[in-house]
Length: 134
Image 1 (cartoon, rainbow, N blue to C red):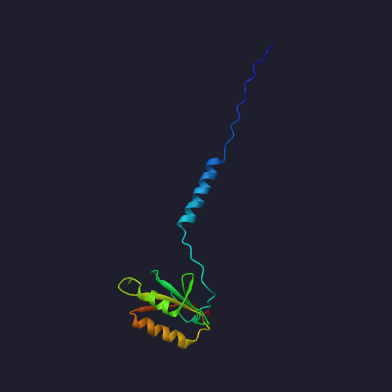
Image 2: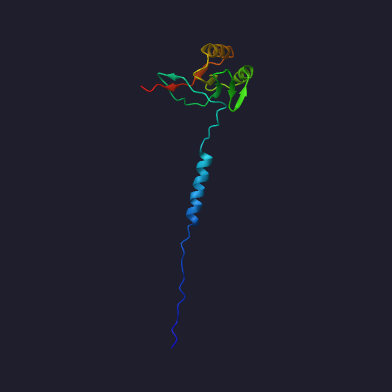
């Protein structure tokens, strides 16, 4: 007597669609995220009693404790900084920049730089500070 053997079909549920979705999400978040370029040198910001976040993106210039100037990831001279600042496009009718100066920077050097920027019609300079922990 011969019994009929039914072939059993194995249904493997594959994880491939789940892996595809995970990789698509990973690619989406990599592309959608805004990366901040590295700073050209270490700058420790001074402390202030108030600190507020800015809503618009402006050009950031760096000033180290030993008097070096930088823009984005390039170390530049003071004259090059002034040329770059003069070429900035106005945002909402204002020519604004962000200055990230080291806390150990000589205050006279910062004041001289602010005066030279004012002569270039830079109407707003935002100095980056850290909030005091009270």
